[in-house]
Length: 283
Image 1 (cartoon, rainbow, N blue to C red):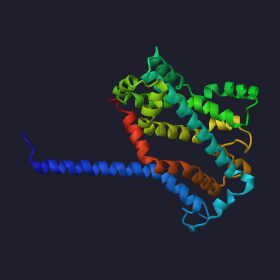
Image 2: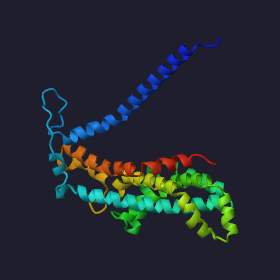
Image 3: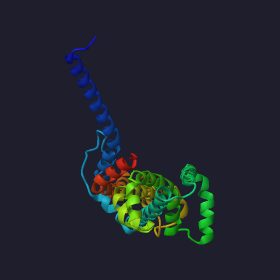
Image 4: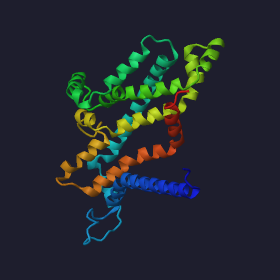
């Protein structure tokens, strides 16, 4: 029996309502912690939700984290520098490896990709002790290389798989045309594939940047002071410095930590979406 059009319109309206409610719930669930973080960062008293406390806006929390004793600007500079170097190194190495494994005749290329994926599944805590001992013997404790090199090694498999899928989506007819014109592999990569793969490279770089910017375990293990300590570890140290949890300063520093990633996502939103969608479809 064919259902009337009125029934279909009612069913579509119900599906649309459920979809809207689900999206609103998901949006609220994801943004509510950030809204609370902003409110506490700008509130004069972190107990402003209590009925007995009047909510008042203040900039004092941000002024407190700017004092030299807390080293927050140094932590932020360290995080940006380490994350930027990690993103650059991981993208360059992963891009070259993905080009070789997908566009050149490399024997066992599929096995190399699977091996890289398998190695990336080990939890970071499993190598923390060995990594600390190696960095101590090299004299790299509390230095940038002690964090940049492990970060590149850890994020490299993900960037490699992502860029390999992206390079496979570029038509191979371009390679044949380039070989006919006498291009070398380096010229093929530089003049043809890299311009086409720019959205994917940018997406991989942003993923590596966010990973290194947010990483906590290695940064806590391999840094000692503000010389190379990153912002996540610096924020975690606030409680020990004050003897109690300074929620206003914590949330103000958290706002400062979130800001660079949000700005990057807003500026490169179109390129990131294009890179993620094109890299996920082969054709």
